Image (cartoon, rainbow, N blue to C red; front, side, top):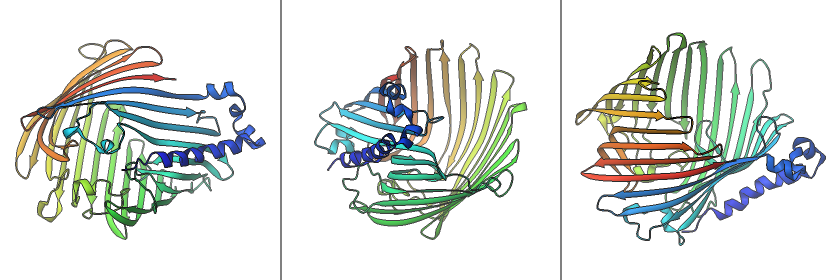
Length: 451
């Protein structure tokens, strides 16, 4: 399999360097970003972090796994004041084990044990004519759907002060990190947003995707999403959304939050309705179909109440109910259930820097009723050092090693964070899962330098 990181890397670099070169070489560029004219200023406007990470895993009777990761994030300029900024984020991964066994992943299909991924490389240009922000390069977009593409995005300024009408447009080539060739792939989208009334915001999105894929077939999909936000009162917000894919209803949801800070009370309600079974769409709209199969239609209701009690205590009560369509037809990660839970929380008690929670829950499924508990405890010894321990239960949990789902999984974990200095931070996380008479261990160690 050909590594898909190299070709898009050069494309994305060109996206970012061309506008920078243009602005730097003109008087306009000198006005927009003077730091580019001075090497000292340029370096002083470079920020980001380097993170080194080692992950050790073991599964009883199935061997061990060692992986080494390197993360790099570079940010040029200050988004709060500079008209031209840039961002880069990428990773390197080295497999330290020759025999992979159950721990084999798609990264191990390449000829070399060292693989790299470029996730972001873009430049932002602000306040040019009627355009508020122009983003060019490899980027993520999370407005209505998680999109990853090489291309351009334009955020236009509001066209009227009263109605708040504004437009967004974007397009390019979708980024499929594990697809060898992006030939024939294309993504384009647009959105319009308006504020017709005081406290009301309405947005309509359209996304078109061409996805030519040798593994899962070719797709051409169109998604429409209508979203609305209503600020009813100082303590009450409402959100609603409805989407259509290829002319058919996909999902609908309503969410409402009541917040009363004076009495430390929050009430949350949400309703989500998946209107149809999701089968075979482009990766952008159905990323896991080829792995998990059909995602059957359902309705889900969630109600949650949090109440603070004095300075040190809080109580969180909730219920979550999922009703499957078609006589309860279920699939992986898509089960019918009734979940009831209650959590007691403490803050700075019994010691300063201590936070503690204990959760009791009851799960009703089509086959069983399970009562269980979870605990989480954190202690900050000082401003630099903190640690935590805990445990939680999952009635269903997906196993990424074997692409299967396990029932009745108990997880125990611990973590430690140590801020060694203003720029250096270390962390150690340990987790063990118990399922099917097996134990799965993960030890994650990292060192981060921020500049």
